[in-house]
Length: 258
Ligand code: KIV
Image (tube, rainbow, N blue to C red):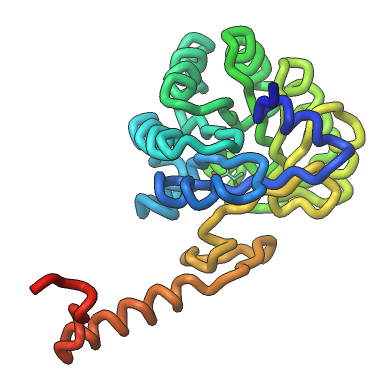
């Protein structure tokens, strides 16, 4: 029997893995018809959906509500849910409890930001039966300590963090915003799939924020590629609807019954 997580892991070295963020039911329904391997209910929903300035404001309540909406779409892809800021830092118990909540709501796996310092939490969540995706490099939940959104270049630390996460039982690792040769070294060193964002072409897969791919984002980073200009297309549709109502054209004959 095929399972999204086993299919995902088996792709390392054979086929590139593709993941996009998704935050709501209707988009999840659309994406379920695609060939994406996984979707990430990312805490980037804070900025893209909820209007927060950073991911630090995102709560478990926010995440649970969006994980639930995505899971309700009954999609075939692997659903990974971000553990938000302060949902796993304080204790192993809290980390397991909150990861369990995500799994109960329909996530197939959770993603935690951090390296060797979260090793124990990762291994205990995995022991509890919940697959964990790591996230190293630029970890936006640590933006205050890092001092801004910048490229992370400490090769030795990144490689040892990746190994620590692999040893703790993570099934995959997102590598955000590092130099491509570092992402390559990590990918060549560990046996689990690496997924790059802003870290070049050498990972086993790529992830982007869906708002950036569709041209919906307020600010599109240089490492993302907008394949559509949906913001302009939405404005144009709204303009046409407004004109049709103002000029009495809408509703058209087919839009009502006498
Ligand atoms: O929340 C998110 O969108 C993410 C990606 C940057 C990987 O964690």
